[in-house]
Length: 329
Image 1 (cartoon, rainbow, N blue to C red):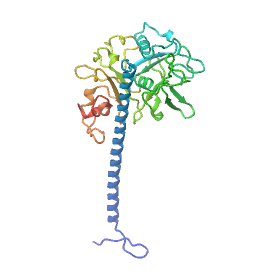
Image 2: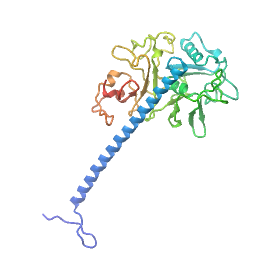
Image 3: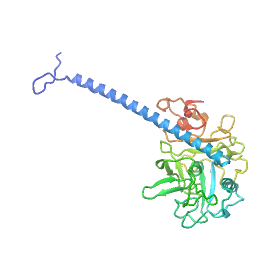
Image 4: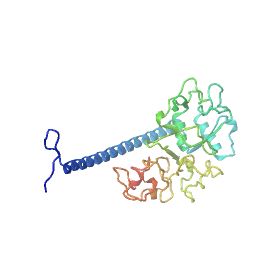
């Protein structure tokens, strides 16, 4: 059978249809290989940046604890503009006030200064002398490490500038400022969740490269640092974070998929005398059980599971595990 060649206008021999199809197939293979290589490089770059961010956070938390001579940043804290309105009968509010007094022994009764500050939250236009804010772990680390947060309405970006050098009122917006323990990029600060009885929507969270907040849990918020019997509800905490109606969970309730701290097989809090930092990873979904998280194998180069179904925590990255959780122990 003859093979017919394509001829151009000059009459010269052209490519056969089969040759053209072969070239197209080769190009398709090359493009797919290039795309896969680019995706692997992107995943690797994001993973490297994620590790760097977690390392920076952990270093800043350690520096904060060492310099301020207090326990690690708590997993939850209540901030009131008027210190006289703290409910001392409430264990969380009482512990919050005690922690603030340890940080700033000269802290005055009223933090609200008209015209110069809106108390703890200058970004809240409705803030007043009696405003109350309850921050969870992801917000606590940005607040204590970054200081006062300012919202630029023209660009809708948030910046941190440390706390005022005035130790009786660290929220003053004029005068000198102590440098923040960590410089958070404005592009990675965002408000997560909405204001509620258990979460303030006016304090920023630090986002990972995938757009989810870094979660934070302190062992000091768990007294005995053991897993509660009901797996996620902290019913057995010791004072000052004792079980209390409305405060039984320390699990970032304002996040779309609430996560809890992780405990080992014996029920001990991982990083028992320290803290846990979590990134949701490329699937942007937090896991809440380390045993399930490490049970499914994954491709360490792409971060993708070899088989489904898999637990959403398989690609979570933390400060207490050498690699992503899905890589196993």
